[in-house]
Length: 100
Image (cartoon, rainbow, N blue to C red; front, side):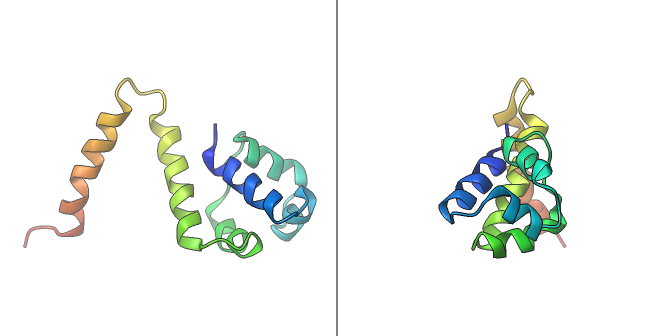
């Protein structure tokens, strides 16, 4: 499952854009974009800025969703995914403000 893919499809359809139109603008074929929307393939990071522009999205929001999708796919089958997220979250303050 790809929450990012669903989000992309919803935004594309809300803007009344055809799959082939967006795919062409992203320099990929419609089959590839369809696979991205269905969660079969991952969107490459370098496509984010152009996709944000095409779909009139905030790039930071789109990038956040892209990263969240990657994290989800990494931990979705773990026995304790919420614990994994809590440990990662607890490490963020340390990484952002390392001791001197």
